[in-house]
Image (cartoon, rainbow, N blue to C red; front, top):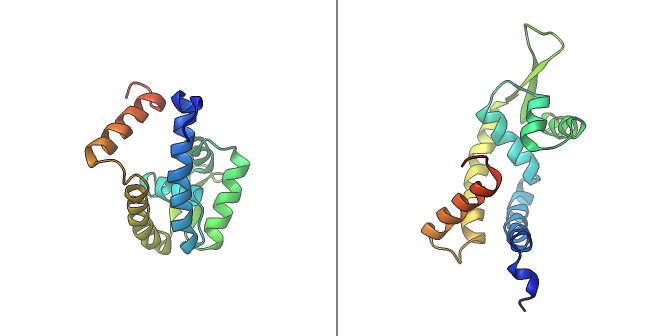
Length: 141
């Protein structure tokens, strides 16, 4: 039943986000992964060699949370930290071969999950929604 809250952008965004997120969570459960882990893998693929602090910044999480996340990915042999030559105290993060292979599959799972959870939209409406959301959270999109 609709409420007056449905007229608020934040409320509508949160309700839509919950639906899309829960759909993705259920699909990633088959791989024993959380959305943050999938996102981290995708970011590492896009920026091979990035530092932990950079990953934390992109994910908008605290650095200690990034350490826990990376420890889990390393424990599953999906990512590796490699000591940087110029600064021996720093580590670059890379996907392992297993991480690369799994991420290929996960990207398709995420794409299908996204389509299924927004099935009420046409492809044009989906593109329009994404563009409008970018205007909300990306500077000068």
